[in-house]
Length: 308
Image (cartoon, rainbow, N blue to C red; front, top):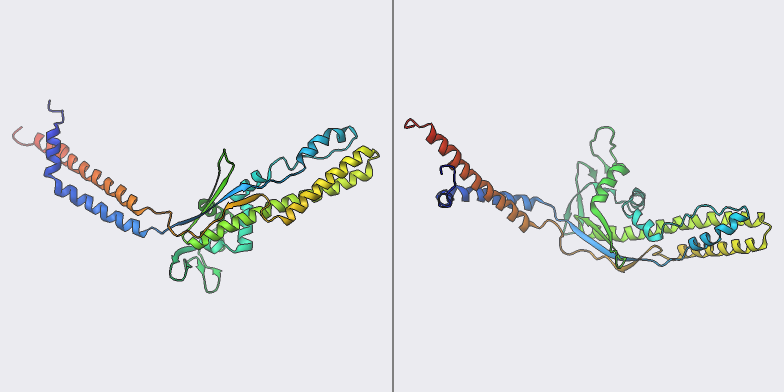
């Protein structure tokens, strides 16, 4: 019976130590407020996209590959086996895209040195120990193997934390989200990611089509078969059309359905939730302290008292 816990005793222990419980809980509540206020607001811009309907020559290439092989002509591997949408999705969080954004849009300071957002003039305040805004030079002090200017590998680690992409399996719609402490930067990056990904895919398809056309030209000159030459001319025409489409269509791989906007509300942190969680944690710690004092130390003192 001595080892059993009495519910009345437990309640009595809690109520008799309410001041200690309230004090510890209040300390944790104060800490939660201070901690939540120290967190930087993060804003998220998003855009919804759909796969662009591009017709490439992959089907025709497969159709005529057998005929060409019988004539001793290889049409090569089907480089268009990966769809434009799949290619675009794989590029969104790639180092290839990040390198273009750094070179073309100069996003490195906002990515690696941003400290605060000045809501008054809508500007980013940079960490002076990392980046000198006036001189536009990096001044960070790092050890080998890192350099004063952040490398592409360093930047890519941070970049993948701020950008996310998902695709609905039913509708095939794609959602891109970009987070940053500046809502304007989040909006710009979302736009730039869409633009640069489309340009990357288009450039790849143009290069692919040009190589195919050059190869087909060589095969047309070498083959003595009229039917095969006709087929090769058809493939050349399809590659030319694909190349033309890639050159004139701005949203070659992904078409914007819902364009991004400058976010007005922060997406993180949810300070109320943080305060509630930390305060409840403090309450549990306080009750645990009371129980330890009562059931461990009080019982121990009773057992070693002279009366025993």
